[in-house]
Length: 449
Ligand SMILES: [Mg+2]
Image (tube, rainbow, N blue to C red; front, top):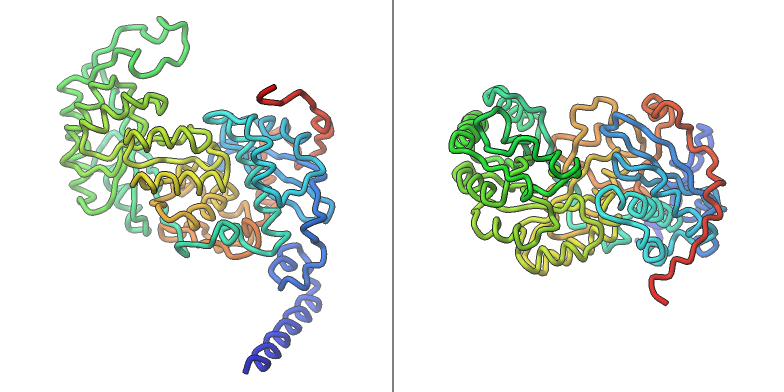
């Protein structure tokens, strides 16, 4: 029986190969989809990085640089710098990884992680890490989730933002339409403090700090009773339309002081909000804990945190109920899984922030598939009609009835659709043009002497 199966397998393999030959289809994707013994172009132990190039798109849904790492064996890896960041965050790392074997993902990550920082500054390190995983997967012919230990699930739950309306019935209906299209988790931006009378705040407070972006506590902005009643009425009307069953998270509150955050959180309790996001900056562990202890709605933060360790502080202190990791800020795919696994030890689930192109989104899908305490992944591009067209290799639309299927092809499992991508490139930016000026950047990068 075994030999019969083997024979059948061989026959179907030859049939496929003959079919591909007959059709003249020798695109990379076809080669990658075939069994290991046909992929003669890659010997992983001899694989070396020969180039790092970029192109930048806008409206995808944000402005995002795409990374391509080339090798001496014709295979390449795709990565993405977090939206709104400069491509230079990735390019400054080129000289540190040239001629290295990209399959040593963790080794190279540890070499470059000192050049990353919080928020967009984590974009270069994270984007390079994603491209290294894509290469390692292509070289060994396995999907990324498999290299992380396999998957806990075949499809990834997606939550999406919805265009706001000042009319809660209209906003509620828009949210309800999302449910009709398959979404099982929603999020709304509340933008609480709007018309005069909803908050007390010192006039010109921003200018008082020289225009620097000061943390919420320093803005002396307190919500009024009228403001609280207004927000509650707004959310009550939304829940009237939407019902109470579906998870509904909330973001964008202020800036409000810690005391006002607590008053707001308490007032919203009866509407079963699934999390209150970034009420104050994530750096303020003790103040976040004060809010989390006082409010009975889960407190969530993290989209601007680089590396696992700051998340560990928040989890250990139980200053948050849910962490919100952005894979293109935290340090990439493996750092996302490690952060999730760490949080699980403290009983904290992990949601994923995502305003990425399909490259960053699919990288997030692999990490989400391989991390047990994963809750839900954001998608900011539900209303961008061409978003799925930017890549090939996965089922379309990528977000289908509120989920993304976990790709099973090698690496990320996607290729760029050049024609579609070129329609959204930032004017003046080229298509993966040479970056030789970044080949020889050298400095003494030792972190100790
Ligand atoms: Mg947010």
